[in-house]
Figure 1 (cartoon, rainbow, N blue to C red):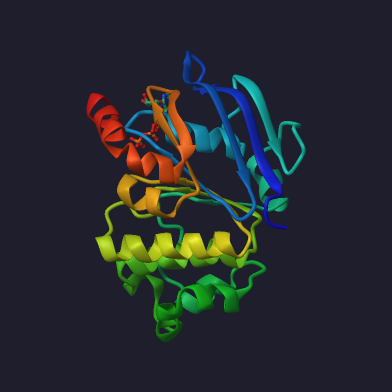
Figure 2: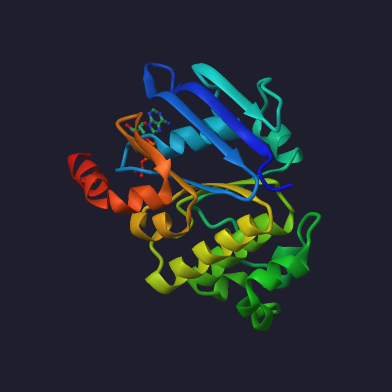
Length: 229
Ligand code: ATP
């Protein structure tokens, strides 16, 4: 149901042993919502996603996943409905588009409904798709597993603006269909147009957290924080 709390994070401290890279992070993702995590390079966005996914152990803080705050590894969270999409294209290049979609238990029709442009490429080897199409296929594969919560880390890295728009539109539509999304994205201007909430991370702490519409009005402040790194 829309508005169900999927992820609740309080006072997260995360890093790689020696010291904390991320401190005092709070965030909530509910179904039907896109929460954008933005900020300059090195701010700690990927570290946050990896920790929340269960790839890295948190140094402190509480992470409640689908109402369960026990520590869990990625595969446990995945089996409860977490999908994770990272910047490296996770398609099998030698398989066809269709074969890529068939791997695992999948709702292929839903995936193709979100990306109708893949329909004419079903028999094509994925390695021959354009970069944008490969990322569509990556996202389609993740969505076809019917996750309840999806983490997306810079899916649009290096893609042309039109392909970026295409991917972000599909993310928004999936959220409108009930998915909760935590989205790390470099294209801040684009992401503020489609997210419900945005969190600006800088040097490991939350600099701003507000409805995306509000942060659109304060875009110059965000740009300034990017320039300061
Ligand atoms: P980008 O947009 O460049 O991907 P980011 O906001 O995702 O940046 P992170 O990748 O989370 O930032 O990196 C935050 C900090 O953690 C950086 O200072 C980085 O050097 C450090 N870091 C990242 N990975 C490791 C690692 N495996 N071991 C130690 N430190 C790391």
